Image (spheres, rainbow, N blue to C red):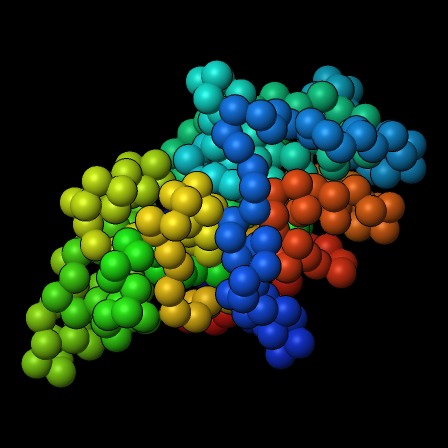
Length: 311
């Protein structure tokens, strides 16, 4: 798989997969949570964790000495990373996670908004110490990056409520216009589905690839496209924000892990995985997930460079 594919998932054990698929039900996670763009700044409503001296000592000296970690994110993917209504605050589940691990490590956070396709090069060339932006570990990416897992996720389809009876999965995309983000695995999957459609004598899928998630979201809201194909937390959040005019349909596709990422061999992974597991143990992690309505995406343990899909 190409390293620009955003959503390729790590392979999950059956039990973990069933936990994630349970998010398709009628609980808070299925509705995308109750987060409001104007009200939830980084770590708002959640105490910032105290510094852990032992874990802080594991931070690479160059980062530890400056007392700050620089983080790149593509802030167009509510509820995981997005810009608040003030037009400047970057917030979301992933952003809270960054601030929480930084608190454990005794570091300040410097965030920068950058389109996803540019994030991996920016991390590998040293512009950022790390990235966190709904990214999945893949074998190709792990050649140049180290990953520290943060949550489960997957892909799904979002449609207008009146289309939910006729569009229930990938097989129903034949002849439809589908919005995706440039460089995403959804783009690849939509193109693969289009080939299946034409091979079966059905109309092709018309794929419209947008430079960012906000543009893709807007294309469905304005009826320029019929389907949004995106990460499940994104589609669930959009459904919740639409107050019933948009709904997620079908099963979770490519269920798997998402992670923070840093340059291969930087050494930052050791402190980050320690901080993540401390947050899981002390309950801060579950509070962050609950804040954004994503409880069913919870991990029981964070790991470095998990086994991933081959391909």
